[in-house]
Each structure stands twice: as C-alpha cells, then as structure tokens.
Length: 351
Image (cartoon, rainbow, N blue to C red; front, top):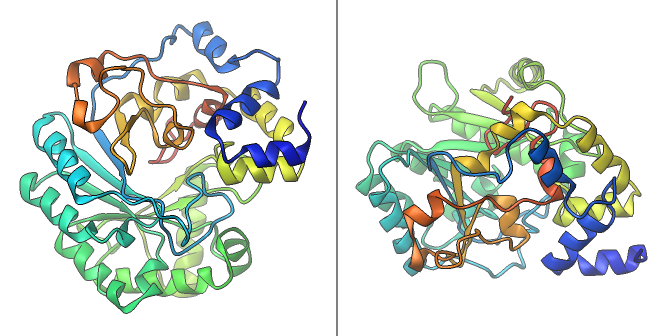
C-alpha cells in the first residue's frame, strides 16, 4: 500500500485516483460497485431517456472550496470555447427529449462567453429549463457580475447555489473566510428581483453538502430547518434544498486521506447501498460535457477522465445519439456515493 504522501501526490492523475479507490476499497474487489449492481440486476448500467445536458463551462472559480470535486479555483485556466459551445447548441437544438440544460463550472459565469451562450440557448429552445450553478459570491466578486440577478431573471434561469449551513462558522470552514456573509448578501439580491418568492416563476434552490466524512441528513428535514433559520435570521427565502453526498474524489478524497477517514467513509457508503437509489442515479438520464467537448456519463466521471463507453462518440464533434443511448455507463467505486441512503444527484436525494 502506498504511503499517504505518495497517495496525495497521485491525486493529480485521474488513473492513480481510480487505482486508489480500487486498491483500498472494503472487500478487496477491483470493482465492488459492479458486484452490487449485478446483485440487483442492474449491470450493465444503461441509460434511460436523455433529459439533462450538463455542461462544464470551465474550471476557473473565484473560490477554492475544500469539498470541490472539480478542483476549481482562480488559478485554473481550462475554459470552454465559443466553438465548443456552438457544438453544444447543435445538440440542444436537435435532441427532442432534452428538457434541461445544466451549466456548471468552476464558476460558469466566469467564462467570457457565458452570457452569449445562455441567450443562444434561450433563443433556440425558448421553453427549455436552464440551470446555472452559481456559487453566490461571484455576484459580488467584480462589478461586471453585479447585474447577474437581473440577467438570470431576464433569461428565466433556475439558480442552484451551494450553502453548507445557515451559520458563518460551518460555511466559511468549507468554502473560505467571508463566504457566508457574501452568500447572504447575494441571496438578498436574488430575493430582491423575485427569486425564491412565493408565486414567482424564478426558482432559487440551495445545495447542502456535509462538511466532513458523513452522509447528509434527511433532505426534507434539513430544508425545513434551513428555511426557518434563514427567514428568521436574515429574511431570506428559497424554493428547495438539495442534499448531495460528497463523492470520494479530488479534494474530498484528499481530505479523507489526510484525516484517515477514507476506509471508514467507503465502508459507510457501502453499508447503506440503496437499490432504489441505484435505479435512479442521475447518469441514466444525464450526459455531462467537459470544458473541452469530451462526453461523460456524469460530472464525477468527468473529473476522473472516465469518458463514455462509446469509442466512436466520445466528443461533441462525433455526437451519435443512437450510440450514446445504447451505451453501458462507466462505473467504479466512487459511484457508491450516489447510491448511499436516500441517494444523491445534482438534484438532491433520489430515493
């Protein structure tokens, strides 16, 4: 077994990260997740209908969050070009069952063509749902972003934002000093233009990730608590809270190793494997597009460089609806994060 120093050094290499997940997984099997799917008749895991088109616009971000599976930050240079965006637009226009475009990053708003891309999507598919995963603080980061709430409203964007907790201590510990105060200010600005207000069509959803090596609690109970505390303390309202399990990759995997929690966390995920959650994993109705146009089954596989299992259609330039619809989804032991307990997806609990 590698030393901790060697393991942490290897995290820069997705292949080494996958090897680590296999090497130190409970049970000693190379892909224990596969055996769990076989046991419930779900292997090979295959897609249903493509409904969600998730696009990573780049890894540049104004924050450096401890749990970030994208390893995003101000120093990242990977950014989607307008040419690649045009290829995305072709898919959005031509895939009839696609009903949601989910824009993520990094901070997607930092892509210089972000607004052009949003307006182009809205132009070709006026009724499609567009989600922007906004970290909130970007709204206050620079004067050029101050009008984002109005831009979101004008284009009927659904805003999804991470807020680790309704207190500064827990939020700042996970996302950086001062993030909570800036997030509260940004939420007020979104409320002021109508987001999260009862009767408004402007949807504002929050995301809760645990701050340590444990699973999120009940989504409905946490939502009720967040709504009560944010209203009482800050007069802030929102629509829904999504609970998302931290996936053991990238910065969170590094944290698990440094804190000597890796084996215990993986055992915890395995012990609460939920067949219902496995049947509803997001990779079955979602395609994830990397900043460089490569195609993945999900955002987590993207960070591990696990491209789709369709040799002749792994890039937008080779898009083949039939091949992608009939592929087998790439899996590994990190997938236990999406099937633990009530399940986890970019839209919260699944079971």
